[in-house]
Length: 452
Image 1 (cartoon, rainbow, N blue to C red):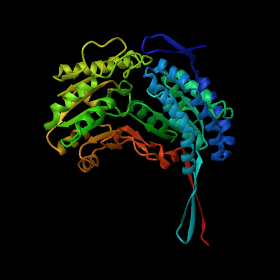
Image 2: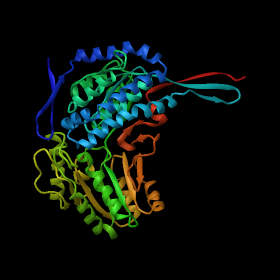
Image 3: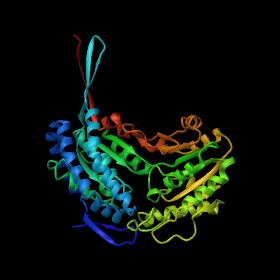
Image 4: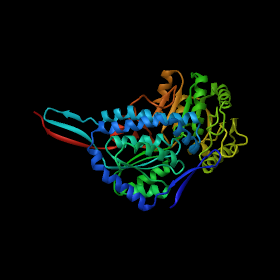
């Protein structure tokens, strides 16, 4: 039997291994999901929620244990890892109720005809998830898929199979056989799952892989939901609170070692305040301790693997060779790690300004007017998140002109509870969360009859 080995990115030690799915295993997993679909969809949403809430309680009870495994396997600081597990556990209660509300039929009566819109399960959902939030990303797709009455086959990242398996094992203590299935592997298994007898493909990951999935699904017109990458801008206006803006810039650029789809990767700051802002960023960046995630005080863990580390360093070195100025960081980077680095005066055509970095490096350039800042922020094929810092009314006016699905004013791009997680341009195809987001996991069925 072939196995998929998982290594600690901080030191290269073996954490564990799982069986690698064969082509026959993929087909069998989909068949189990298909066989379980009839009874699962027949259950009332509240019955499904009651089962999943029990799993949520176990996740909360085991948050320390699972958080430690997550840190070993992915590298993020322990506090963040435990918090990620707890967030999923708590979400089983709050999010299930939100989804139940989204499934309520809606009626339209024009006086002549009464139409009722129902939200029915699609069937079998293939969920393909990344490694950077290795329990919350599966949860983000699995929970709405299950709650809307679909059965699921999950293929987590080959970098973090153990924590995903642990998540599935917790849920399967309470779910009927075949409702939630997991397969392990890399590109081959992902392609086989996309090609299998599934009704919906929900994917979170890179734009290039998302485009391949969309093309592969087109032949049979499978439903597709894609949450893709970003190259998020931060605009700092001359009337911004610089301490606040600089603190946000550093935290949002370097959190999770920059391995976040809505990391700030490009900062545009008004010329009149740029010198002071760079000094504040350098001071904040110096406080970001680098090291293994299980060490006290560490805020920036290792890169997930050497391939990702090499990509980040290649972009960084290319930018410096093109004339970028190192404001903070740089120097020698320890094996498996990248120092939090702030670059200024970066060539706008450098790869680090065009392609997603997904590492702890942020670029700071200057602008002379609001319109120039907006043009620079929009000069990308991505459009996931963005932020604008400044006097609130001024900042909101600029924010409305930025081509991103989510824009924060004097904060990150995360919205109020119940709002969608949505990308623009090549950062998304469909969206997550919110009433409409949950309904993407359903087939809308309109039943109409004469009024009166």
